[in-house]
Each structure stands twice: as C-alpha cells, then as structure tokens.
Length: 249
Image (tube, rainbow, N blue to C red):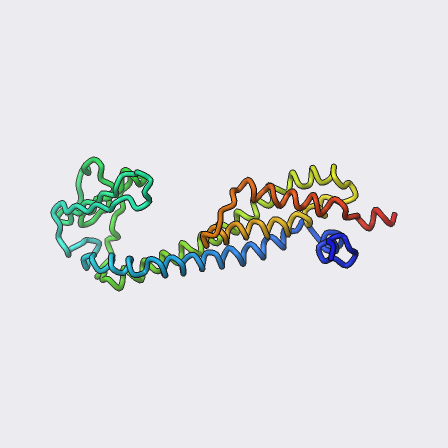
C-alpha cells in the first residue's frame, strides 16, 4: 500500500491529526526509554552480578556508631582500583585511616580518603568533604552493601531511561525547526502543524531504533544520522501529501 493512498494511516494522521505530533513522541519515547533503562539493568546484572557479589564479599563489615566508624580500625590502609575503562586514566586510589576522626590534609594522588567521621574526595572527584551523619548507627554487612548497590543500579537504569525520554523530546523539537522551514518550501499546502505530525513518526522510529540497537550492541547510529534520516523521510513522505482544506477551497 502506497503512503500516498487515501486510506493510508500516515497520510490521514498528517492531514487530520492534532498538534505537532508531540503526543506521539512523548508516549512512545517514554515507553521505550523506561524499557531501555530496565533492560540495561537486567543486562548488567546478568553479565556482572557474579563479579559484583565476589567483590562485595571481599569488603570488611563496617560498624558505625553515632556517626563514627568504630570497626574496622585502619591505619593508612591503601586500596588501588585499576582503570577498568582502558582509557589510560589513572587508577582509583583509596586510603582508609579510621583510627582518626579527621585530618588537616590528604596525600597527593589520593581520590578517596576515609577517616572515622569524614570522607574526603579529591582528584577524580570534585574536591569536598562528606561528614558521616552524627545520628547514624548501622552495621554495614555484605547484604546491606548488595541491597544498596542493587538500588543504585535500578535508580541509574530508570534515570537513564528518563534522560533518554527527555532528550528525545528536546531533539525532536530541535529537529522540527528545519523540518518546518524546508517543508514549507517543498510543499506549501501543508501547515506547520502538519509538517510536525509528519516528522513525529520517522523521528520516534529512528531515535528509538538507535537507542535499542546501541544498548544491545547491534550497531551504533551517530546523532547526525539520527537527525538527518528522519528529516529526509519526512520531506520525501510529506512532499506529495495535500492539505484537503486547501485542495477543496
């Protein structure tokens, strides 16, 4: 069935729909964004769960009482976490000195410095000091750490999904400007709203295919092509469509 036939759904939507197609972009991008975030978490858990659990089991059980680490007591214990990204960044250097409550300065080339009451951040992180809440009393067991990491992972996955959803809307609105401007030169019978509706479906299809394919590692589409392909499809499909109100006048 040709896209230019009278009973074609795409043509009917462009001619008789409402708005600029934002409702299509919002609902489909929200659904795909959340599914992508959830699938990302499940993929990470399936690939790295065993390694994460093994790493957690090597951690000490930490006892915090009234905002102070009382167990275990470390005297300048050093941990080096290698650069896992392979991008030739420096290894992560952590020093634990829980025998003291705080220090006046921390050694150079130290990313995280732990004392009994404070956490010092430097180098790879924005420099700052985090105070352990004075009313915090807890025993941080391996199960507590696993539950915390699981919550962080799910929070990160959902956050990524929502970020993709927001970016889809923003980029759609950004791409809509040239689509409307050049669209009016290609086919002046279509209104700005009609060109927006014509752009909505190509955009959500190409955008979400690029996201899903990237997450699954099938292939990657650069952002330039994510913009260019829907625009070209919109102008090609929209060129022969007529505005029935203009035609019948």
